[in-house]
Amino acid sequence: MKVTFLGTGTSQGVPVIGCDCPVCSSLDFRDKRFRTAIHLDIDGKSIVIDTGPDFRQQMLREKISSLDAILYTHQHKDHTAGLDDIRPYNFSQKKDIPIYGTKEVLEQIKMEFSYIFQEVKYPGVPAVIPNEITKSPFVAEGISVIPIEVLHYRLPVLGFRFKDFTYITDASFISEKEMRKIKGTKVLVLNALQKEYHISHFTLEKAIEMVNIIKPERAFFTHISHKLGNHKEVEDSLPENIKLAFDGLKIHID
Image (cartoon, rainbow, N blue to C red):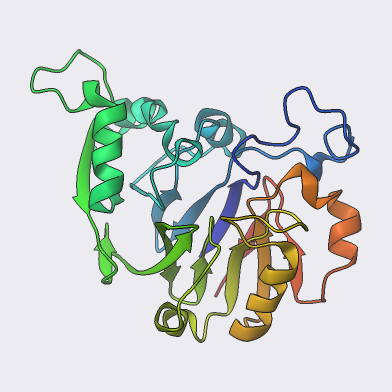
């Protein structure tokens, strides 16, 4: 399995429009963050988790030429807004793209992209196959997936486990029941928004605490705000088994 971090930033991205803080002004490429998403190359399948507003630039940057499925964590715009840009994959692959999300996520997508789901479609609109999922394990294009429900303040959000890899973003709470689904994960991706308390995201301190409870071999933090600090300075302060993810980072999992 190869995991590519398409984006590692929070909903505004980094740099933030109009901000001249040290992070937004940084020349370190790792401090430039598109909205959070990942790509999985797993057992010959190309899977994306979330299509945010930067989806087109992300896929072009990584030269991803095929797309087999999209999984959605939740319905917020920074995770769904780029759905229209799947059209080149429809055209080149000559097929509809399966998308997977909870009932609430699919309803939101159908509302925001209503033209995709009209009975009489405008020629060339994106073509998708909606698949409703719950907290129960499911199979996406032959790939086994274990959903992990977390809370983003009061909003249920899904993380996903694929074999020994677990991806969780936009979390502020994980129940003991859902934590059991993560047990044994070798590689964990978790959100760490900033150092100060936030109502709907793990802080850096809380994310480190969660890693110490879950005990993966390796952990990577994502969904990072400009308020967290410069990439190098923050990463240098982390335990040896924890890294800050950055856009374009690729990790391999046996």
